[in-house]
Length: 320
Image (cartoon, rainbow, N blue to C red; front, side, top):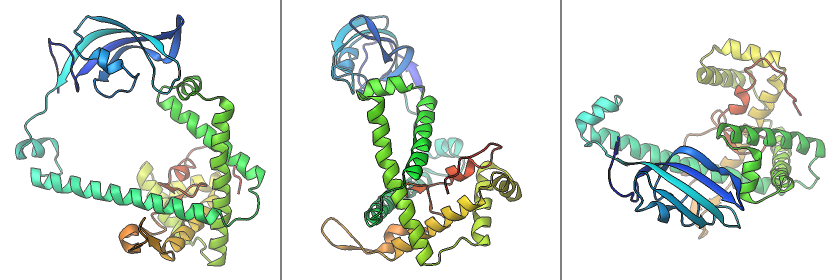
């Protein structure tokens, strides 16, 4: 719970600010906002931003020059402190847990669940790293050049997805380029490198799937339709109909085959730590298999998000 306080701001306080950032009198994108709730100590904005906020009081107007994060030139800041609040945490006891966390009956049960989630998250990070390194090594074995048409198709998707992410975060492309101090060409070139690698991974995984006869069966398709249906709260038959309508069944079959190829690679590879000691494959991979591991064209782990997009009434530019 946040409560208003009548004292100078300190680390961990939540302060409501009006922020104006400019250079040579011109406003800087992303550094002008009203009623911004900011946690003191995050050091997100500029080098000395938090140092200036600490010790300020409600109603105070601050003016200073500092180097914004991600930029190479200083900017002039005018910050008005409109409210200072501190977070007051409730007493953590069995009663609070049972009232606010209905799935847990006690603190011990809640802590145990949290530990399990943290451990699973850690293992997922390890699995993601294993998949990334395995597919990257596989891509290095591809001797042919990545077909330009496939690279261009993948690149279009990456650019569109990135722009959607920016939009969802309220950031324009111009603001992002300004913050990261890069040109549009540099931004696209970086994505193109990813697309080139992704296409080589795609080619390699298809080759593995073909060599090992890792075809997608009807049962595999049904499993995916059921999983997607559960995620979007629709019937599996409706999901299949949407895939049929968008001529996307072939894409899904290819995706499943590539997932099987990754599964085959992971279970037929030997892993070692940075000291060369063997790592137990079952410990790393757990119970995961190709039914649960879906990949996009980069070979990275996914969660069927791309597949879900087919459950809409629109056309797709399929490259396969």
